[in-house]
Length: 326
Image (tube, rainbow, N blue to C red; front, side):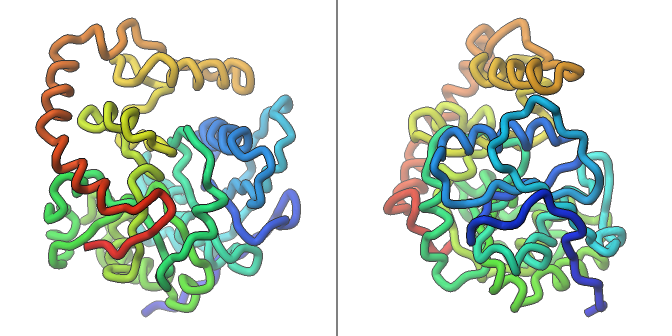
């Protein structure tokens, strides 16, 4: 295994205030959406007992009128450790920065709940999740939506790596036990594998985490990372999802085809108009209900998968109890 310099904090807007943190990793492009999600979380947890952190690797241009909600901005020097991995327009150094959080912030936080910036917080409870029993595992996550209804489905990247089929999680929401992750040297293992497989993986950073923690993670209820697709959006409403995650290239702030509800696109539009007026939301002319073919297809898919989704959700006693993936 190649020796790498450990990630370190080079600048911080304030000291850590709590033992737990909800953390986003952002660059200039995704900063508005990280701030949007952070503001949602703050409003849902007005008396929060965890820090809100935005980690970054370079300067950020913060809006002057953004509410003072106590966000901690942390600049992290990764020592160039991600330069050997596959980088492109969608997977920048900020994408991989989640791997460096335990090493850089482990002395500040016992637990970190990492979230992608393209999430939409609907309900509270993060303080309870941050303190839940992780069953001795270094990491907890939600199964990737490709396995929600078909648990035995083998992701393409596991085939590429010649790994057996097994539970595979989505890395958009990760509950981290920083001490265990550092003790088990997860960053170095991920970098070592990523260097050898650079360019071969479809979901590079996500697959790296899955490969190096295989059999060593706890499974969270999908309500904490409801991966929003045409086949799951109705269930998100009926099952009272806590965190929506807009996976894939289509986002509510650039939605010209009407994939998302007007309430969601309006929320982003209002926020950007106030805080980032130079950015605009592309508002669709139609909503999903005005496209009968898409609506019918979605309804049929939901109907056909109802029993499998019910069985999957029934595995979780409640939203805060983690289980062993199987």
